[in-house]
Image 1 (cartoon, rainbow, N blue to C red):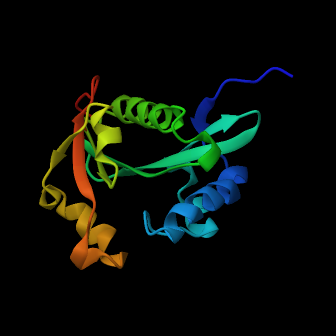
Image 2 (tube, helix red, strand yellow):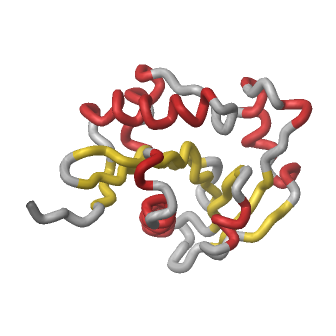
Length: 161
């Protein structure tokens, strides 16, 4: 049996349960906020998935804040596929989608800054993103003691939209 390569694609409704299962493990560890299947379904067109041999093995989501600023979030990979380039492929495809939309700057909030440094991101002050704090962070139990690092990357190909 030949092993197929990892494909990155836009998520479909049928991927919602797999995305939830993958992200639940990270949520249980306190690495990301838990998302219900219903929330994932509502936002399914903002998700990308990594797939190998027909199985969803990773996901990430896009969250638009302005015409030129968007977050790459909810990056999660099945344990058996970590450190195999899956996360990097998801982020690179997310950046391509954002650039196609005219987004100039991508940001992340992360506890793994070395991973994002290797992809060309650099650390910035979290206060640079008040929209994020008001929209999402108010639901986080770590709001007053956030241990995430904000990082940004200027995207190639971002155009005025």
